[in-house]
Length: 138
Length: 427
Image (tube, rainbow over all chains, first blue to last red; front, side, top):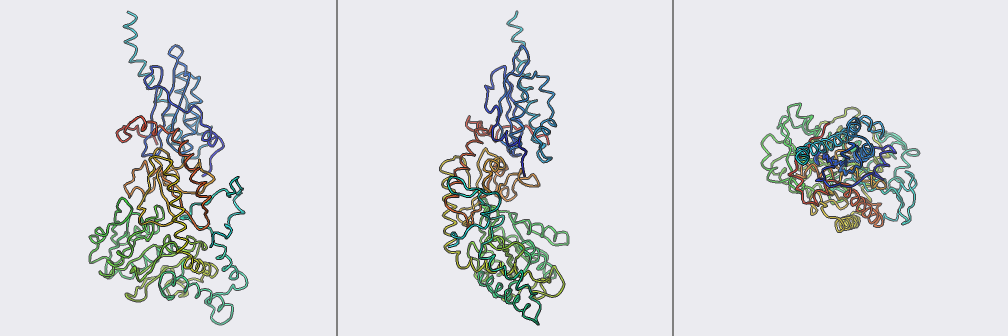
């Protein structure tokens, strides 16, 4: 199988590799996929609670080159976006950008899932923190 | 020795010299196919133009010259496996040989019984042929294998019944290089009057195979796994003690004593014979050299990386094979990182079916480790310098990919990956 230049570029120079503190209330963590399926993506976002803008994103991926490229691209795209803008990213856009062949479409689906899971985790943390914040205000 | 001969592919594939003087890309996938030995090509060349005759033409020197080449090849193949020339039938390769052996025996002995025994780690040419026969009333037992890839002889004994007509178990596995206890299996078959076929394509020319000592009745052989040409194969069919008969797949002019009609591929056959003659001559030293390089590769990788697992028994093993799983790293991404080296992976991503290797799964290797496996197939034309280069490239790439792997990070944090509830993938 031959890879597109963009997949090769992300594979050779993955953007935003790393991890953030899972316990930080501004950080949302998405962990999707399964080792038995050959793909696991961890995508993390750091959100500014005032603006809802994703200020930083990190990823680590176990998977093929297309999975690595899809998650690397996802971190690039979510950075600087608001939560709602990030939720609007579609896997088909990732497929198009990386020129993924049909057998690799599931990699882009997983990347979209990872974005949603990270945002979901962050939202959960915000809601859990709310009553506490309210109490403090009283 | 043959190492002094230039690798035939050295001028092709856009290869370029790297600073160490190694030609890239390096071919280390010799279970898929082998480069042809230049001595084999030399043997074949006259039979394309000057000696183009049909070996079945009995009345003129063109035919005689072709026939002479065919008979010389038959002798050379027979000699390598301890058979007689009349027991060698030429075919187009391993898949045809496996089909001819299994379907040919099944049809011939149908009156006697309808039960066939094979193993789950066989090549698809055997498994799919058996599956085909199931549609026609044959009963097939697919023996499991043990953790080391070997068939349990007690399982085989229990599987045999009075309807068993054929046992087909490979000599050496194409993925994990494990050598099955062929001699013991052959003995058990002969004691019960059951025909024993072995797909020996990965073993012949690499390790000693003797049809009499091992009680083999039918054996598949192919040229391109032992530095011969593609499209040239053979089937050994025993002629006495017992005499085995097979029904042909291809009917026609009655070539090959009626077992395989069709004008013979004379250049291919000449090449196959020469490849066997070279193997006969050089196998003892070559096997030692292959095993030495294999161990060098294994030790070099395993001394520098943790959580690397060898797949299959190392005790009963082809000299040139090494199949290892690199935990927390997916096989296809590893192949992408070592793209100047040609090897194979058991990862689902590298297969058409998107399923990880069924051979590794049969060993009880978890799907996660099957996805992380790489098969190195070391061959006649590989050098120690190449082994060292490959080991270095593999180690640096695995280290890089582990830094990228969430599984490695979790394992290092002490998370038991087996206890994690993974979100199912949406595809």
